[in-house]
Length: 346
Image (tube, rainbow, N blue to C red):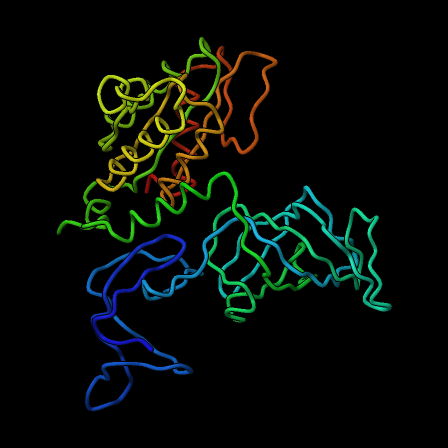
């Protein structure tokens, strides 16, 4: 049941708003509620941007939000389902890239006998698996809610499998994801909405995270990028993790690095809420720490840039890579183009 005055949470972005009206066609008076099975329109008390595939719910009945879960899968593809390659997962109206993280057990659909020693899922196999998605998505276990607990798997242009969610799994980001969710739902907003800031600034908020060894030119490129964006009329700020050690993080010891990363992520998300583009470069944080920051600032856009010497290794999930010897202006131009591509710069 949806009623006027209900406070809704949209998952996985954690955006909140209050139902202002329930809409209906060709009626003398607008209804005050809507029930199950009706195609319903409603307006909110403020303008928020919600992507296709998000789940609206009351605060008391939130769906799970995760990027790692166990499932039972039935495979129908002509090519076997294998790990370490991308597939597309469709759950309700949400589409997200996924991969097969682990095969726990396979059952032959004809004989119902278990098949233990297989590293791929063949046509007509039923398997118990762990799935990892590229981005968090809102879902439920199938036994709790079948509509948001079932999905299909697309390989290329073909639906090649289907499955049901059996268990939501915790990973190393779960603590930070829950913290961000509780913070976002309880956040007290001002009168100026983010959409208004975007309209005035001419760009969306976003964060550019630099990684790389000392001496590769991260700071030099980050400062050049900040100056280029500022001179172009953008709202931008260079946030160095070491600066937090001088004040907000002065009580944090070197042994409690995770807490330092958490505080950095919370400062970054405040700047993002203010409509800023945040440029971050520091030797204090490594690639794994950047994943924590990405979780804390979700769903704001994050671009990772890695700097290295010739022959250096580039971490996985890096958007752009430059060498210490690369031309500064050309590198900054590529970053700006990437910001345009992902929608930070309009």
